[in-house]
Length: 247
Image (tube, rainbow, N blue to C red; front, side):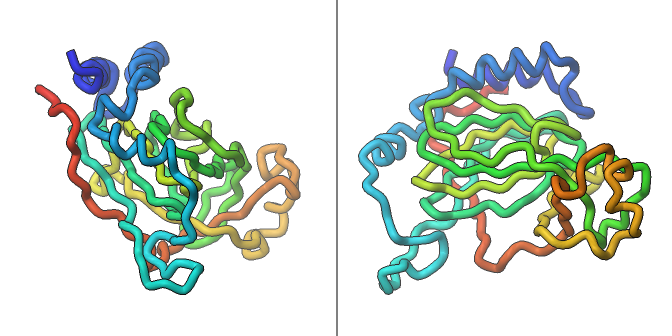
């Protein structure tokens, strides 16, 4: 049985419309995701190119730094499957491309870097008693600020921990395999929002107090506000060339 088919079957029994059915279910899916390789999803040729990649001055959707007008392809999303319980897909990122800081409200996300090198920075919201106006800044704590290089194991982020808000920058061409449970759904209140750093000065004075920030020192809190991504941020649907999933 193709590896991606085994992964689909594991997701089908492990995820529900409200998310993973248990911690063991997540571990089961993760163990199979760990085994997925570029060759299992039709990306072996792209992975081979990266292994001999010497670097490039070009950026996603922008003129290269050497002044030429050459453009790389935009970020591509290879759709594999989506249902009420989960979605499976792959983001293929050219070097220097960026997926801005965004969230996964109420979702568990399993990811694996299939090939290439990627810089990731992630945050979790700081729990506070006060209800926040989504138009105002909200405090978060840094959970990850590092590079990832394939081959490597898969990662898991949870609705309130593990780096639910994150941003990616491709250092080399890379591909990121993503499983979301449940998937994005505006109708169910799970829409993707983008964020930027800002000051927390527009919050009440007592919100700068460590106790009000869930015990987190104010100097360790990052204030984030919702924003619209840059017009240069483009994701296009790509063609998935791997084995088809049999329902």
